[in-house]
Image 1 (cartoon, rainbow, N blue to C red):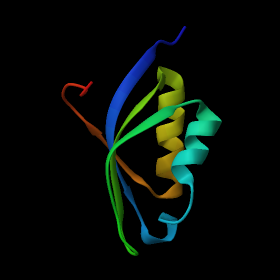
Image 2 (image 1 turned 90 degrees about the vertical axis):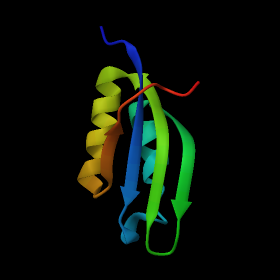
Image 3 (image 1 turned 45 degrees about the vertical axis):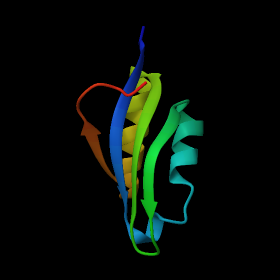
Image 4 (image 1 turned 60 degrees about the horizontal axis):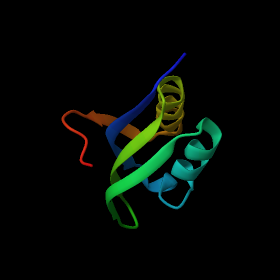
Length: 82
């Protein structure tokens, strides 16, 4: 059985996805809870630092789905800020 994990990630969105609800869809489809820590969005660029919480297998599926859509996902190492 999978355990609940938290991951910190940086998401970089291409211009064509900035206005799309990709994070909402991923969270809903894979039962992953996003906690946005920082975001910077312009008309041509989007970047978010966030914590994702969910079952390990759901986190993997959710991250893979973001990557398949063209979002750059980078794992951030280090302690989770509580």
